[in-house]
Length: 433
Image (cartoon, rainbow, N blue to C red; front, side):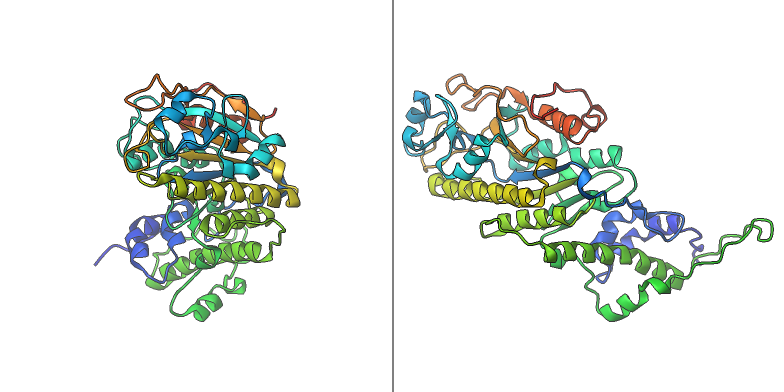
């Protein structure tokens, strides 16, 4: 006969396999069970902080965005010479200065730039770049190129180091899977593709909800130590273990209700583009308006692996990106939240300088990033990499992406960056003081 499980902490440690296998237990549980290993059946959560905290929104451009056709060196002869079928004509480019400009379909983003709400960081990458989607994405998301098999990311380490309590609301990812960047050692945030999918889906929902009514949680009356000596810990029974699971699951249900309420109540005049990307940004804006205690949101726009027939596809993606970021900014402005939210775009790598024989571009290295929001120092950071002094046909980076992270951690999220990134990187002039 097995020894009784005498503490909830031990039960949690032994019960993870059970949780992962139980189809009626929300996914939230197996992702956050260790964080809820408290001595009593109570949530260890942060309280909503209202409209006082700064928020970072990550936009991942998945597949390897062609940065040369996003921030375009239209005045460089080499650009037109090596991209005869992909180069944008100078008179179509949305000019930033006398050398470079934005893709023609980024007019909504150019308007934000002209309004002082966009910073363009040029030539971002890292030493000895990897051209594999998976490995390079791991490097960007972990911020640890030396780790061949990372299990937690730079934002996850931020949660672990800087966020008090164990509230999974501290980070929310909109998508089917949790990105490595958000995974911490102690805290794993929430992840769902649509708000309505993040809730209990068991076979007997009504009984579950009845079980988890607040009045079903008896509280012992106060006792004085003199009259009530400490009682020995009673071994947990199968019934008490399941009761604890259900009560822990209630946290997921309450969290789900809060998210559904925020998403359902949000009204905006902002014109989001159709599709998954626009819907994701709309959801993030709704959750911000709903005063969740979330500090980091994560969304993705995919389809950037343009090896063939790039022009039409990339034009479409730039249209989605521009319309989405513009609508999101307008939504935040309606809420009065624009100055406390920053958006950072990134991709796992850029594309090669020269187009290939299929009218596309192959995996490259350095590429630009955008930082969008009312808190930025607007303008251009860094210089555009040379189109002739190349690294095996690729642009050479002049800004280490971990310097961008360090700046956002220290100057925006107000957290020391060295414990998170492993060393102190040079900060960039991105954030208003």
